[in-house]
Length: 280
Length: 321
Image (cartoon, rainbow over all chains, first blue to last red; front, top):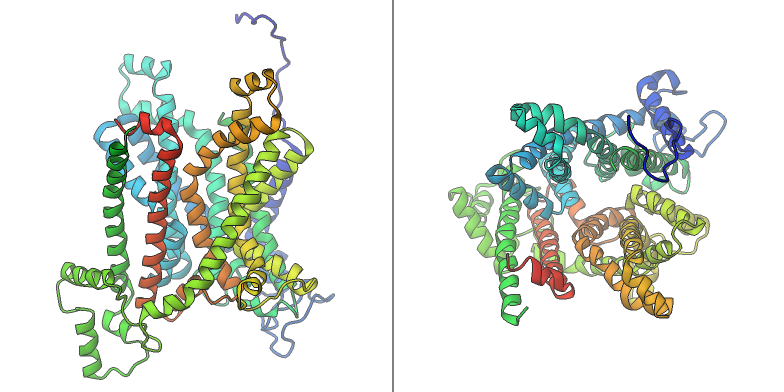
């Protein structure tokens, strides 16, 4: 049995307490996910139906968030836009971290030549102005949304590899690794069954933070007209297409803009909380 | 550290920066070949494709040479300040860049001042009042700022202060210093907010750490005023992590400028880049990209050198090894 230290008061088994802000953030994310999944079921109107004779109108009982330049219902477009707002960032964050975890584990645990080769590449990529590279490459190569997802995924791999590597380096000198090595357990087994579960929480927290960052970046590329195809209901794209109707229907800009911030803030809060709670 | 070892350090950093610049320049050069379609037709743009024009373009960009030779010739032209000719209007890219540079420099400098001044101040206040309501408000604003890209905050600022309150102009870069500052106030603020959030976060964390150190307790015990302690010791030490993050800050401001210029329709380099991308004007894209990335690399180099001069531990610790 464990002997309590001097002055230590036996605490009751602590329940996981989730602060109210995090619950709120989780609620917002759930709402956005619901919109992305059930798009057609929830939206009051088709996001593609044009009413050129109506044009851009401010909010009214028929169109709660008004209509855009082509007379399309803004609220429906925002609800549909949840899909491109979520799918791309998920691919970027999960993709980047899958590769980064592999590279980081190898680099941190093996050290030596592998480590320095991987880290040189990472240093080079970190020295590049990432967001600018994304704009230029996606702009010149073309291909829109999925090119953007790919380019961002590659750019995110560099900082993520560094994060995983430093987490692995923290684990390496710990006694349990030494014990596992003494027992003659293979390197692959140590890496994936012993180190990986211990750096898992940090990775999870950073996946959430990466997601928020990818969301903002993808929306930005769409805002510059480089992301999704013209006409796609997408929050960033809506800011690009509706930028001239700020006077006639400001909601067409403020609603998607607000959704970008709200989703990104929620994801950042969740990521920060996961980090504080599980990774420290 | 003696003067000669500082020179050695600068040389070593330069030795790392030069290959980086070369690789970036190769990437920029390769854009013409990465772009979908035949390079000649990309460079032709809207001109009539008669054989003499095509031949002139092939000769101008050395398209008949092997790839590496093309790069070498292109690079030597770039070094001599020749960035090629824009597809639209047949104008020298350097000329267009020179026209647009002023707005971008003004905008980025203005928001750098905003980022560093209020950013450091807010971070310092939050750290000094750590745990109070004020601190929590600053931290919450920081999370908001960090999650709000410049083009989104820009739209909100434009609507609230430009359209609703009508305090600031919503179009154009303005003429003369004061008028320009007034026109660029909202764009500079939009650009500053997201980067400011990083600065506040770093300053606050560093300062909280410094405030808990023994030398602060000792200085208090000797009866030094808080003002003296904060300004002379704590702030100075807290700024070191900020210098380390300077690269992040510079990239944030430069890339953010692209978005802000598009949001506020400002005739700067960022808007020029986006416009060139939409019109597939490769020489202009190459010119601005090269300028932006060279700027970022050189600022990082300068920061590294300044860093070693500010913090003696770096000089004595790492340089020798």
